[in-house]
Image (cartoon, rainbow, N blue to C red; front, side, top):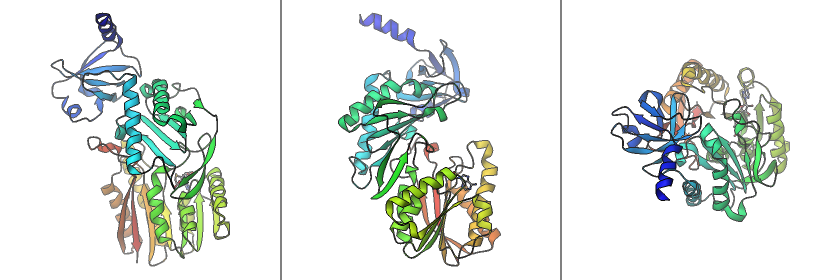
Length: 402
Ligand code: SAH
């Protein structure tokens, strides 16, 4: 019996052998195998198959998802063990355990968090956001998409009764044709829910909203804005569902203006403002941020700049830097003396040094003195594996302008 299993097992997966020396990054737990590192492939793996990766000497390094392209394998498990059902249960349980340690689960004033942050949780290509009992899954690789059943079972095992439903929203994050449609994989088919973040109420709609429905990664930075908001006039550009605006208003901002180029986003913002009864101090604006900033009164105490990723790929890096420079330059020119700008970049390929450089160029062009008060990052539920620095994507500065 065991011998049969062994034979079956060998037939089930292809084997990828690396060129000599190319095992080094894997031995350091970097989870990607690039196409150039491969010496030969035994078997014919299809998109998303689990393959075994071996070093040149024949020793097994681990198992991962195969995908055609520059990143050919995304490692799931290092060592000799095949990633079976127990593997998925262990990984999801471990991810939840970290969120418990951070104090996000079972939750009090916050019941929305990122449960799985890809490589940062040892699950390359997988994002799961948790909205008070509802898990929204986004797969970024075909292999992960094919593991949906394991993922749902592991979520059921980890959350038990607390799990209301699991919604798969991978059709927007996968190449065309891999996922036909977004759908519920388990539980009640509810499209949205009111959740709490640091005691603030937000209506989230994961079916029609952007990404998984809410930008969870700004939780701590919104809190920081709240600390500076008392009595201030604030412009929140790229507001989406009004996260920063709600914190500002709840912390007694004198006035908040929320701007987004999407009418739908502004409607979400207004819904969230209405939950807090602070509508009187709020105005919403549907506009393109850069031309709008060019013509504003110079009477804002604080401006928030949180644009979508300007660089989605390495090739777009130069243009992205110019984009950040232009946007920040307008805001630095227009802010009231003594004002603050909360400025962000969520482009993975633009690191803190490059981003700071873009803001410095903006300050030079605007001809104003600028000081950095805070450096901001993604929060602890978006962990970064020390072996995979590529997992760090959100960075921001609070700058004071004389
Ligand atoms: N700060 C938000 C998240 C921002 S997401 C939060 O805390 O939830 C980026 C937003 O920028 C999206 O809502 C998108 O509609 C908007 N956007 C994209 N291009 C824009 C532009 N040129 N001007 C204004 N808004 C824009």
